[in-house]
Length: 279
Image (cartoon, rainbow, N blue to C red; front, side, top):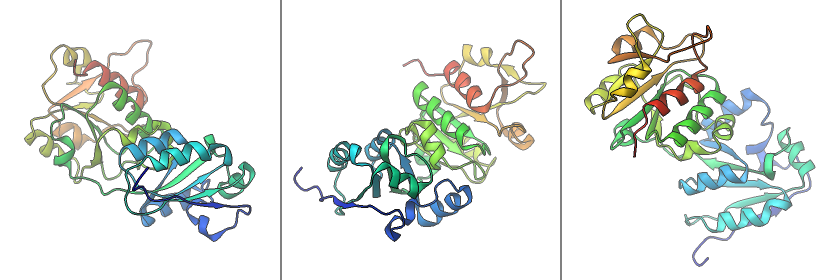
């Protein structure tokens, strides 16, 4: 494609090349959680996830790929919007990839992506009718699953609190199948002070919690507000008392079989579906 920067393809045979520092020891949780924020990078795993990141306008720093996937990745990268910089593509056999990363690379591709700056809350919720708020959800799998449900069911935006797990952490991205790039999101800080920002924007905030004064999700589904923010709490402890007190109403999901609650990602999917905008 005319005007698109050329790819810089480098074939590797050894796993200890210093140029691969972004990809080394990805199975070490402590190294990965320190490395990504400080370097301003996140890791996209698989061609599907990389494609969604590119479609969202995210810029790759480099790509690590097996020979089998090089043609598809080349076409994908060459079709991106040009930013004036060539993309370094490292090509290595699967055994070398596993020696570099410490695990079998799913679908033969990883990409080190530049983290985009987070937009302000007002920008993310502008025009939104349904917003999900994840309060201190620390499990990356649950964050990714919540984003996937939000994307699938039509939630317009997601806000994550300061202590919530990183949606761009590799596991979150993978579990979401790259939908963290589809749904507009940002961090809301301070929290629960951010409820005032939502209220000023015309949102009714509904805290999902087991409470004596909670209303059934059935009631909310029967008469939903025009703009609704559903607030989901951390695994185990649920929402903070201050959050429940600040919300406009507290909502519970009707349960059967002696079960009192659902996993936060499952609860989010149920609530998103019940209160979805019929478009």
